[in-house]
Image (tube, rainbow, N blue to C red; front, side, top):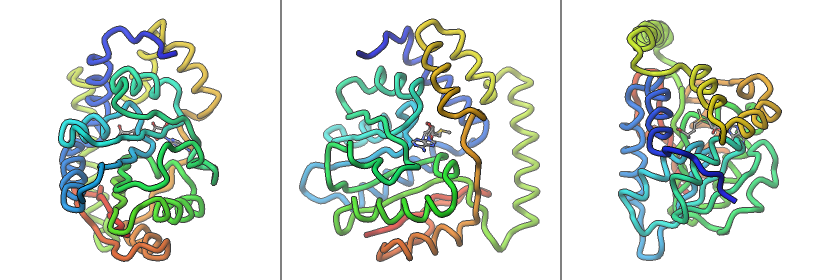
Amino acid sequence: MTPYIGDIDAWQESWDRQQEAYLPDREHRFAAMLDAVDAIRDTGPLRLLDLAGGTGTISLRALRRFPDAELTLVDLDPALLALATAALRDRATIVTADLGRPDWHHALPHRRYDAVLTATALHWLPADRLATLYGELCDLLRPGGLLVNADYMPDDALPELTKRLLARSRERREARYAAGAALSWSQWWEQAEQDETLRPLVRQRHGIYPTGHSPEWNPPVSWHLDALAKAGFAEAGTLWRGGPDAAVVGLR
Ligand SMILES: C[S@@+](CC[C@H](N)C(=O)[O-])C[C@H]1O[C@@H](n2cnc3c(N)ncnc32)[C@H](O)[C@@H]1O
């Protein structure tokens, strides 16, 4: 049963502000993803997989743009999944699965998708698992379908500028926190734990991600392009770049 979440819009908004403190151009990458989906649409039902979808940010935007799309959201975090379920209601199939496991896709409602979209998440997986996952995602896509992964993926050719960009964005983030414009990641989770409905789910989460999140691994964009090509995608390239972040795309 879906737990009752008081003001779901307020939770969605506070998650978005918290994420935007790290990624001021977060909406730009989502728009680029959805433009790519629009470009590969065919006449059948549009099946989209929001991978490690958290509170459902990508699904909500995809449904705004493609109201008839069939959305599947996969994640492992019970608290974020509860927020996604409350926001998306019956407009998406919500699946609890661990992307670290090769059987994660067994619970999906469809065997083929037009697009897999993911943001700020796959750096939680170790290198070998992510390389294998890219292959599993290629198999899930119809010919002509695409995977978009947006994350911190620096440009290999710009090591010094990347350092400076990161330092500036850290300063801007600290200024936002100081002005009370957004909560930090840990403050957001502390606030979620204050909520009576979310509290047991946040505590359950502590068991799933004992360190707050999985170990982070952030290779440059060239690693992703190489891994996508090796995973079997016919085309692999950069769809969008914003400073040290990028969205890579694999077209099956
Ligand atoms: C920073 S959040 C981003 C969520 C969402 N994509 C967004 O942009 O708002 C990272 C997400 O990855 C999910 N995640 C991390 N490791 C995972 C795993 N092994 N299996 C499933 N989900 C995972 C987390 O639970 C979390 O929801």
